[in-house]
Image (cartoon, rainbow over all chains, first blue to last red; front, side, top):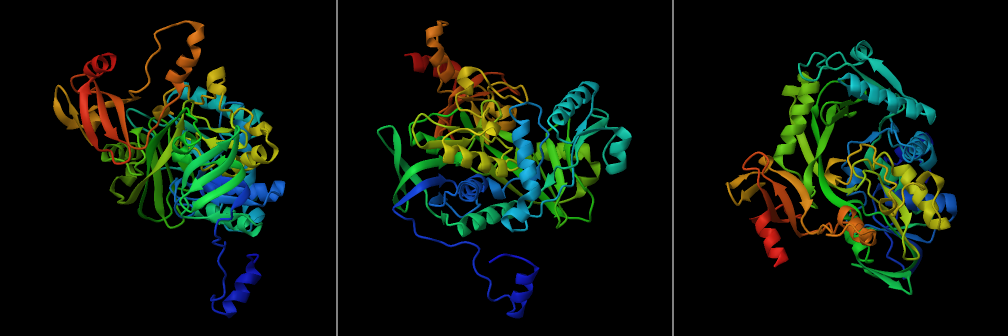
Length: 416
Length: 92
């Protein structure tokens, strides 16, 4: 059923008792053309674009838990395309363009809100670096504006502009950036893929990958074996674990990242704002809660929960930026497992095993990339070649020396 | 998390900084023929779900390096030894 004002009115006559489930819960078939491992944002968007753009509909998405139980429902919902490097910027801008048309495209309200993303700067060198990044964005046709202190003050008068250590001198603003309701992204893609014939199989954990004569042949799962011609891995924090089943060792470490939401308060922060002197980013949800986060805890983890020192660190950075939030109470905190790559950039590529494709290394920037990641991964799987937008995201770039190191940190996954 | 430093005893984790997996061994040769070993050492990680050995630095304490055995699923520390002790055991 197509969702619209008319379907809403029609269903109101039956007091909303006749809505049907948004997707089926099929039993796994014996064989599929394509199996995608991971029913999160990237796996579901891949299945959606495989069906919609390439007509590949004999597809299964395997999810070990419930749909969208991983990072698609754990992030701080920020979208932006304010990158510096040529390998990244066109990809993230394509993602932004897909966000802009997404709700009409998959007929689901994902509450895409282009409220603007503002990165603050505190020193002259940081201003110069931001100006450079802004220019790089504009060369790629992306909007970016360098704001001075007074322009920032007009937008956010309650920031601590005269902080003794980190005075705020201005910021770089991408007006087209913003937030999206993350769960709805998973649901919208799932519904769109399901309607086109994709089987979404929940509570189905991958336990093995069988390769015959250098080709992917079959996957072993907690719900039985499934034969497949092609296999796409989009397992985020568990990427190393699933790649290991095919004998592949990845340039990835799994780390825990925490996020937080405060009690609901009156409308306060209109944009997404990031602190330039520490790692802190905040926006305000439609329910009024401040949604914020900071750095990784910093040690390898699969635990999906962090520890208290990082809670304290994030809150300190937040209060340094906005002293007014010091007495706002924190409502919840949670953690997600990030697939941190060695250069801070993702991998969307083929592998040396025919029919096996990789989508991983999203660090903690995977949410904004969800549409373009699925789009490019679907292209890579369907055509067995890389799209020009993910041409730089090759697995062998580390060996060849073509890293895409946005932050210039080197091979230190916990610092990207 | 509390980490048992071999020199200082059990201390809060925020006194320590983290380097990472103690598994990879630095290749001893600079021969270009060993580049695959270097690639493996610098970039590839086992990234285990479960017990791993990892380097920690007691940067806010005795400034000694240590190797801890920790479970990445539960954050439980199983044992710690000094990095020197670890290296001696590994080479013997």
